[in-house]
Structure formats: structure tokens, C-alpha cells
Length: 87
Image (cartoon, rainbow, N blue to C red; front, side, top):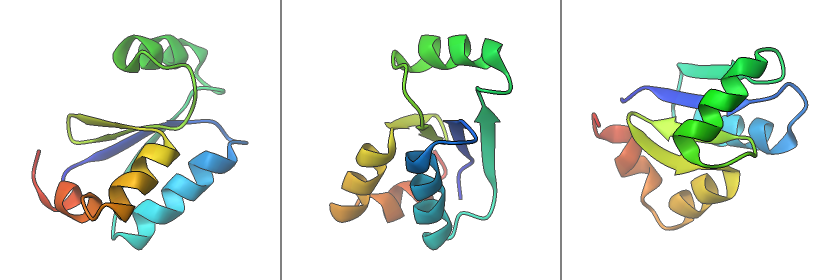
């Protein structure tokens, strides 16, 4: 399984939903970067993704996007393949 990274905050309900969906899909190791605790990481996140909102999720080197993007991949049946492939 590729690594999964999520830019998040401590109070973001969409981050919680994304984490629950990833856990349901078998992701045991989720690297979370809490941009409310590490403000410099917000700038890094925005430079990497071009987005300001959290969560921002990476599976391997692939930028998935936010929770809505993650859920759409799951509904389309593409999330399992993305999580299975070493990207």
C-alpha cells in the first residue's frame, strides 16, 4: 500500500470523515500534518496543491484533493485501486 499523507487541522469535520473513510479502506498508517499546529506547513500545502482548504490528501505522489474528491473516487470504484498500487 502506498503512503497516505493528509494536511489537516484539529477541528476539521471533513478531515475526520476522510480519515474514517481511509481507515475503512484499510489504511493503517496515515501521516497527518496539522497545519493549525504548524503554520509554516500551510504555505507548503498551498504551494504543493494550489488549494487553501483542508483536508488535502496524497496517496503516494498522487494528489487526491479534499474529502469530496476522495469520496468521489470511492463512489467511482477507483479508490481501492489507487490504494493498492504502489504509486
